Length: 266
Image (cartoon, rainbow, N blue to C red; front, side):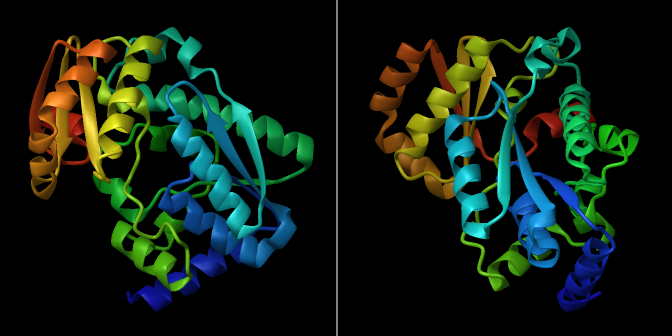
């Protein structure tokens, strides 16, 4: 199916709805859904962003900016997954507990506002990855128009570019908890360490990276072309990371979903 046909399918899926809440993270997937939904449903669409300790402050700021540029009404709510012991234990299905918390909150909002539908930014490629949050979406009747239109991640970026979304090439930004290996407990301290470390590295101009938290060891994952930047600034990085609380750093190749790959190969 050509991208133009997929776009028509996406529009048709959204046209079926009289109103919708968009689970809006500020990433490219949910931004595209919001853009198209707002274009079709207008003020009957509301973007809702979940704020929690696992969301970097910079990402929250960008979500506000993107929603404003699109023109949609935007609500920010607090979610309490970080108070759930099942989530904090960091099992391999941690995302299920996070998304369950999110969708339950969105269900409450939908009832209060009389909005029938909740839609998210799950794309067709997500079906090929380990995504425990998909189960939570199914359990709460959440609609995934990108997935239903068979739009892949590359399709999403290309369509976003054609629709003049400024963030069409924005790198994926999973929650901070994804930097902690499964089975190692999530704490606010760990999340803040990761956020500060990644923010410091991004100030060098590295757009896509991860800092994995292995106790006192930080594993910096960057693309091959960015390793020179890390090497050139290694002294500064070591000093900063030491202040953050890491005693040692290692450097590895970047690959989104690295911890999922480890899990699948276990």
